[in-house]
Amino acid sequence: MSDPNEAQYLAIREEAEAAAGPVSSLRVRARGYLDLYHQSNGVCVFALVAANGALWASWYLICAKLAAMVFACTDPTVRMSPRTRYRQFAAYVMVLKDINKLVMLETYVLVHTIQRLGVEVAIAKGIPADLAHDYAKAMTAQRPRPTILRDLYHRHFLWEQERVVSTKLEEGFAVFTWPFMSQLCQRPWVWFGYFRPGKSMNFRNFTDQAERVEKGLIAYDRAVAMGLERIARLSAARIKIYPGRAAFLKRPAHGIAEPSSIGQGR
Image (spheres, rainbow, N blue to C red):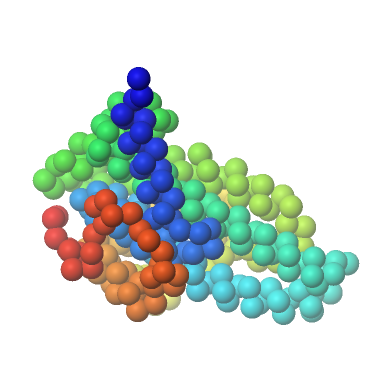
């Protein structure tokens, strides 16, 4: 006899794939992350911050590609053909986009498995027990305390770093043997749409997990200071102005928040 929970769980994973879109489509995932924030009743602030991360990366990586094309032809520090240099950089960019998609998939699965199948099923599928229980409580609470939301964000961020991000980043840099561009990529300049002018986050070592977590908490605290619902409205407006390929993809129908619903529910 088939397990109805398993069938529903597989359906959730299929929905997650549709919401995440193709690996290259960062703005599709920005929309998906923003939807997740609303579907979680404003509890999954990780998704809201990640939506802004995807929006930032969608233009930053284009600028980086243009720079890489120039540097591939002009860097005199290594004996490597321009084509090989650029291919290495392009492969690294695809690693970043693949990480972004994997994190989006698992965040979607986390939120919807807890909401639709319950905590025990979520735990059985590999979601940490403490994270599953605390998300379930927060998503059904009328107004979770700010300290609870920050703690959930921190633990969710750490889980994704340990589960996906750190290993894939290290593997991506291990085969990035063009020293000049690899070193530049270790020090990205990060500026989300809700950061104040002159308040970018500049990395010293992007493969350092502790530094990524530190910067992730800075991004969270700045979001809270500006107002989460205000950021959600501004993010939705940015996506609406330039949706990327999102307009041509069919998104899952379950629980998708339309722009008119932003700011409601919490």
